[in-house]
Amino acid sequence: MSLRAMNAITLWLPRRLKRFAGDRRGVSAVEFALVAPVMIALYLGMVEVSDGIAADRKVSLAASTLANLAAQYTTISTGDMDNILDASSAIIVPYSASNLSMTVTCLNIDSNKNVTAKWSVGRNAAALSGTVSIPTDLKVPGQLILAEVSYAYTPIVGYTITGTLNMSDRMYMAPRISAPDYNGTACAS
Image (spheres, rainbow, N blue to C red):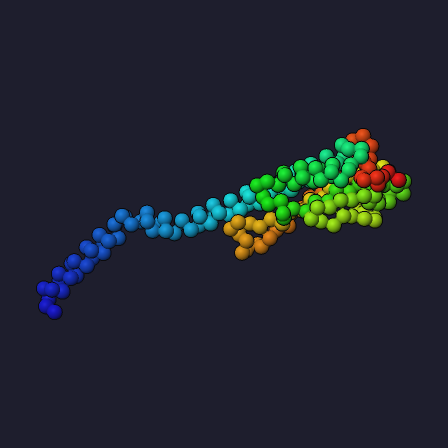
């Protein structure tokens, strides 16, 4: 290689490198390529969290509704109980009601603060029987309606990370008029 050719390269190369370093045309594309996956992951994460919170809120509303409706009756027939359970499970929409488990129980609390399930009805869940544990502050002689609702929530995107999440809530409510009888079974002792 001749001296003249080497001088041309040594003069040409720094100018080209300087021009390349000053070129900003592709910076936005590179920045977007670096930031986009993070932003998409944050967006999908927020969608998952929002959807999970909405499902959990609906579980709490279903438990509240189940206890509230059962507490308004003085006598509950099988048809009435089906209507109560149907109305409570309708709250979970747009989520699938097939993943919903509900139990409504009439509890009797005697003067010794022993809590006994007098009758219990479950949908996709086992009914309670015998002695039941409740918070100490609620152990006041009389009757209580206990509604328990659980829901197997499956995240849309994050299923592979978390799997199915079990959400549940319980609601205690005093009978409005008197302790309801269910199919001839009294709640009061």
